[in-house]
Amino acid sequence: MVRLKAPNHAISFNDAIKKEVKFEPYELDSFVLLRKDKSPTYNFACACDDLLYEISLIIRGEDHVSNTPKQILIQQALGSNDPIIYAHLPIILDEASGKKMSKRDEASSVKWLLNQGFLPVAIVNYLITIGNKVPKEVFSLNEAIEWFSLENLSNSPAHFNLKYLKHLNHQHLKRLDDEKLLELAPIKDKNLLGLLRLFIEECGTLLELKEKISLFLEPKDIVKTYENEDFKERCLVLFNALKSMDFQAYKDFESFKKEAMRLSQLKGKDFFKPLRILLTGNSHGVELPLIFPYIQSHYQEILRLKA
Image (cartoon, rainbow, N blue to C red; front, side, top):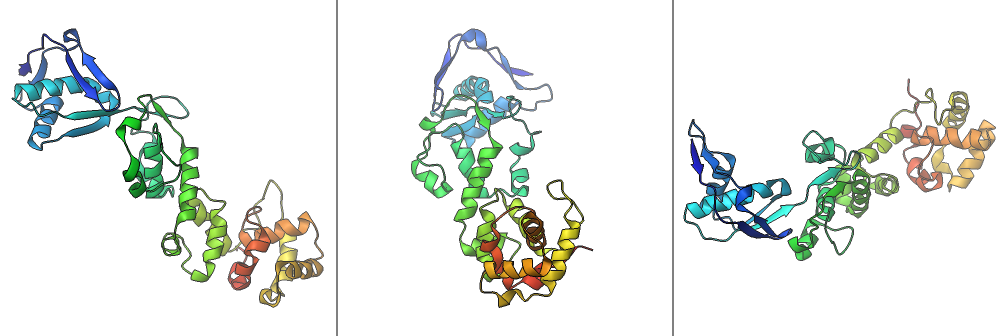
């Protein structure tokens, strides 16, 4: 086993975030460089790797602050005087528990966030925002490159806020151009781009958008309850009335609605809730007059019941 003798003087360095950090001699012991099997320890391997690759800036979590003086001592022992700038990021705390986020936390995984429908640009936007002074709320990576500075980062722990990340993701969904939106959405019909934009107003993630589109296009489930109420019979009455109508024959939603109410003899909630369920697969959502123009051209595909 090989050790590096403990120093008899303080080791200090300027951290880009924490400013001056100092370790007194009593805080450092004669630490191991090589184990009995001659394998290198973490600090020895890191210090050598940084020297070999001529690393000039190291950004890492503040849980590595205590490793920094050891790595500095190793580099000095190897004859290096090349200064390295260190920046130790504050830890990120779980919003619910207040404890440090770990690999076991789902939201700490970029893969999990992507699978949940968060856009890469929104994830980057949020991560740069955490504990940082940013000039605006919504931005791209290229925009952040123009003004990002380590000096603006707080040295206090930050809380991971999934709700705020979803808000940022919603903003980035709205900023998608038509081509990118069609690439990511389950609908590839350019004529339905306006419909996608309407649904985005109520969605925080791509997953939520896909669920809304699926409910809209798939056969409607009238057997299940909506808002703790059974609409099955009213849906069946209205469905039979709608099947006899040519949606494209009506100039607007108002004229369509009047005819549907006349044929079904349903009014008020007994009419509007079943109508929304039959046309969108949900009991609430975007105003029907706004989505009716898109329904008109696809009503035969939309107006179907789940077996």
